[in-house]
Length: 638
Ligand code: ATP
Image (cartoon, rainbow, N blue to C red; front, side):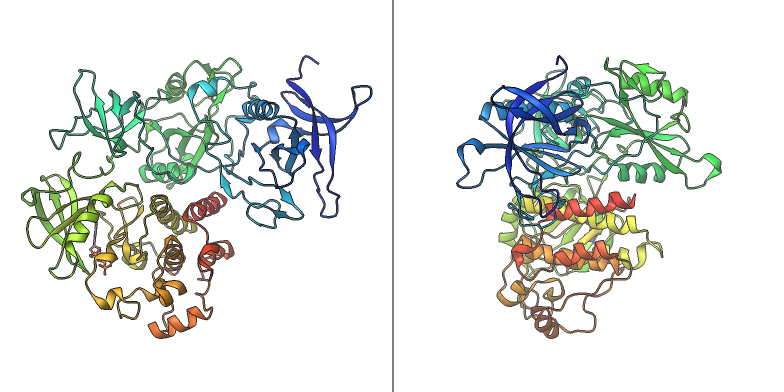
């Protein structure tokens, strides 16, 4: 009995494992141990538990959450919770809110290191062959609501140390399961009392008097976060000023100061980076897809392979909180462990020979200094012409002689300038690694300039047609779609509508990362041929019926365009509906015509792009959902 963590009499709903199984509610005696949650018959008269009716292994649990009650639920079933495991949900009804909260908290503690913890769940019941929350009819359908954190736990050093039981002495190598990080979230809301310590991942030279210089690997105290892109900070000498928030990381695990640690990097990004360095024994340490865990990713060229292959090793923890990769060698800290394996392979395919870091290139800042959005054109140097668009010529140049920038020189009469200048202040605050960063504007002279981040591989459409190798891999194509979906999920979270999403409005950087550009700009075009849906320059081929018929733009019309963009990616840049003219497209798309499945797209990819072309806008997915679906597919490919 002493092994029992909790015991309680609950009502349990029958699990309806078959469609014909009856739905009933029975009282069962539940017992929770480290290993299992078991339920027994209960003799009410004698107050004793009887025969075992069933159990669920704790390590198979993927999610523990409350369930929303239905209207007219009887009093005794007011406090339901669900335990999701591989056979579906187990619904249990507690007698009070307190008891329910205690069980959920305890279970979450127990399962937090489980493999395959869910990131989305169904907040309502599975009932009569349907999820009541999202009306999906497949019991194993992915959840429709995102959990705030991975089952309520953040990855911190302390939670990792509180591991519930020693991990089994596993062989060092492991295959990571399908857990995926969610697409990047919008910047955190202001935290007035923030006094957190951060470490600079990059050096930053102050661009204005208000800025504070950052020195790589040094600690800073954050004093104010009211602007999500520029935080007020203090250095160790007491100097205060603004720093780009994406140049620092919270000193949470203490690993941030090590070059080999790549926080927020997933498996596929790690492989891409290791392969681009292409060094035998090249390695990095990253957050595992399992919350609170770390993984060593290592490139090996055993057998003289030229390309090399990647291995991923989970850093395991003993009951005493020590770390190990090889069973026999335990260390008090991860840096000690890494140091040991830099000299000894000890069971791995090779020792850790070269640190591969993703910190070579500092990311873009939201503007060229805190509060700067008007740029002095005297600091710009023009180097070469990149192309011409709706607003005129775009040039590559330098700001202050050293920072790469793209400069759009706005042809007079092509843009409603005053409105745009107002909007630019908002656009500058949009910052995401898959959006082309607006740095600022030069508005004191004519033509006005829009200054943005420069992407060396230019427009995605051109890249698809000419820049890619002849046979791009399925992972390459899907990664491009993933990049766009994540940039767009961020715009969606900011309630910002693009209105002209297409491959021609995405750019590609030197690593092949795709970024969305020109968001919202179409509203400032002064050209009826472009703005009127009947105009020859209107993006008819990327528009859903409600835009073509009623000019109704929304995030859902962006979703439609995203489906067409996926199609462009999988046809390597063909023109959508190439045999039809605009009038025919309006007519036929409104009557149900859709783009065909490109040869390079398998059924799963095509089903994602087709889901964007639902006639009813509200039945199309959100970008957040799309990003998760695309990422799921990527995991399947890897
Ligand atoms: P439209 O304005 O009609 O949508 P567009 O998107 O091609 O067409 P611009 O955004 O003005 O027009 O860009 C013109 C060309 O300049 C692009 O095709 C691209 O090759 C290049 N370009 C634009 N911005 C950048 C940038 N930030 N980095 C690198 N190249 C760029």
